[in-house]
Image (cartoon, rainbow, N blue to C red):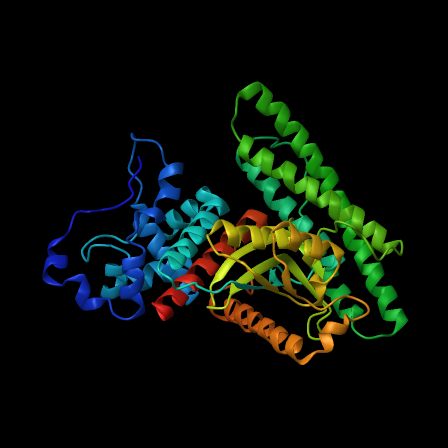
Length: 447
């Protein structure tokens, strides 16, 4: 049953008013989040009026703001809120009442999805525009990478992971009483040993070391192929048993089917790599996060990052007017529509756009023109435009560099360096909450 607020005041709140414990930034954010517009996205998705009541959505939202403001995990968040009177008051939790369990917060986060975060961020930017905190007509754009929460991918490591995940999935199926007599051998220990030897031999530039590493990788691949074959037999017999016995264990069967599909992709791409193919389109870099992709950024410290591309549009006041998360590494010019369009929907009047050279080509010019932005301060790809040599143009272009510091702050203080939620939807949720927490902080700074 839907429950947006908990309006019942306890005795402790009457003894210790909220104004006594909420000061500075938290006092300002408390008044901002009191607006009912921030609860409308939850009300639209919780339509049931019967059944067990949920935790108040106001409480959930405020706890997630605290989580991403401090970079805590769910269990740490619950523990810290339970021990703090001021955080209890901010999250609207009675001093004698229980704090929502960490698993409840996790389930609600996945249930609402990234669309809720898009609406929350748009409403917050609209509020900043209404209160005249955003007055600028300049927008600077840039892209970055939010890394997935995965280990550095290697072919032998992915094959060993496939063996481990398939073994776990088969055990769950057999634990449900399905395909119990089908033979399946546990090869995890052998796969781990060969993977370790492959990593050890791969160090150094000696050609013989690489040959030995490829030999160990081929052995791990063979183990994974044998595991896939036996897991397919388990899946076939389990489906036959479910067909005669109802829906028992169907969840584990679906999981085993997904793991088999990803494991087959790992086997295919490993075979291509051992055959000498170095560039494999759509390469799987993690079985835990299949949507993550290798992204070449050309940076000296990290030439290749594994995760998701994030585009950010920032106003002169430091608010992230809009953002978008993409799979893979699309051209920067393909992100202009999402960023500029999102900023315009939030009520920001854009007259000037600032970006780096990656946006300076014909598709970028056409994208800016579609939104009526004539003043575009972007250096051209290839041969420089003569206007770029003028002192006035270079002075204006220096304004663009401010977004580099904003992206750094988003990564260091608000969690955009690495997403802890898996999949594209998980990355969008994580980035959305990080941007929302940042904009709230900026709201408190300027209010």
